[in-house]
Length: 121
Image (cartoon, helix red, strand yellow):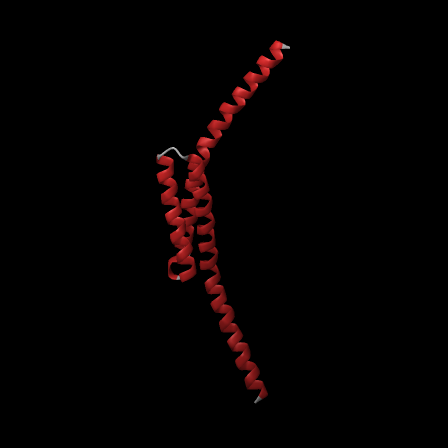
């Protein structure tokens, strides 16, 4: 019985150490992911679209705050900021990609409406 308890304790200790190691790398990977998402949004022209630019700015601010938290070894809080930063950067990217498609759809709709008016007259 005693060896089972000691064995269970050792197993939990090893599992706990493994969990700590994984937790330490996650914010670093998230930092890279958020930076990649920010760069993709910038490359897609998010800065020239007001809604996308706002989300891009928030992503940058949250990434900077996460860096500050990582320097203070506040990894859990940094991880939350990085998740929000990546989400905002991805939204900025989606908005940047959507704007030209929406403009093209509006242009085509105007052409259709003009053709309809021309056929009625």
